[in-house]
Amino acid sequence: MCSLIGAYVGGARRRGEVFSNLQTHILSDRQTSGYDCQHQLRQLNREESQSVLPSVIKHPRNRCLLKAFVLAGRWDKLEHTWQNGIVDKLGAVSWRLVARYMISECRRWETSLTAAMKAARSGNIAQFLESVYRDQNFMNKTDSMGYDVWFWALTGGNIDIIDYLRRNNVAVHGLVTEAY
Figure 1 (cartoon, rainbow, N blue to C red):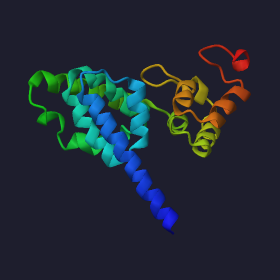
Figure 2: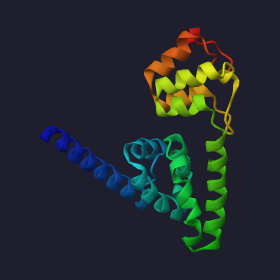
Figure 3: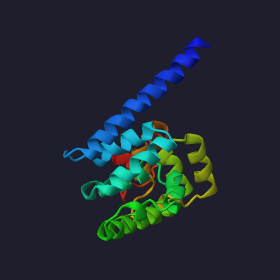
């Protein structure tokens, strides 16, 4: 029992450190990379991800990080934040217009993902296999940005999903994975 409590406290402390680090990087003059942002967002829970969002939107040079929310699988969890009018609270009209455009682009991107892409992104092999069996044409589909299931499998990083695609000779942008 004590080890379970210790693990919970340790996890919460670790998420707190990740949250603080991400906020510091977003607010600093140093540019945060999309990969770093995505990696850290995956370590945060829903509420923590939501509280990072205003910092990203308020700083024009960081708005490119909005796409990291899609890549990390945190975008769909933020939908009610948009309904609460977070963009309208930003102040300057130009900020709101740019933020609205980028938010609508990310919305389109998130909704264009197939079930196989979402499962590959999250690294859930069971959901991935289920979606592949339901849609045998999964490998020929792309999202609104032109990415296929390979992109999402590599983004998710689950070696079992990547191996499945490789073993089944799923084409990588027109090339067969035997060359992989």
